[in-house]
Amino acid sequence: MCRIAPESKNTSRIDWCMDVDLRGTGTLIRHKLRFDIPLPTSTASDHRNPDKAQLLADILIMREQGMSYREIGAALGIHWTRVGQILKIIL
Image 1 (cartoon, rainbow, N blue to C red):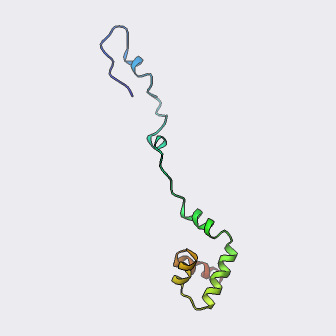
Image 2 (cartoon, rainbow, N blue to C red):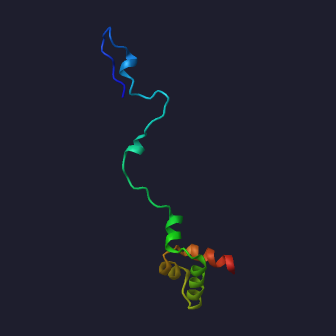
Image 3 (tube, one colour):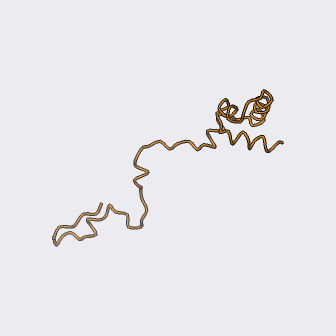
């Protein structure tokens, strides 16, 4: 950070500001703080259900058993609207 230079004949204001990057680049505060960045929901979903063909087969089996979209979604860990989207693709 730039400090106000003392009134002296030997130093200039520039000498006191040498640690400041005047080009506007440098380490931002968000780079200095250590905090967890949450995993995107699409990536989390891919980790839970890596085999989409198997997911579709499971949904079809559960639907044949008479389960609702909400029950299927709760059992598979996906939102019930996603169940409807997957079924809409093939039907």
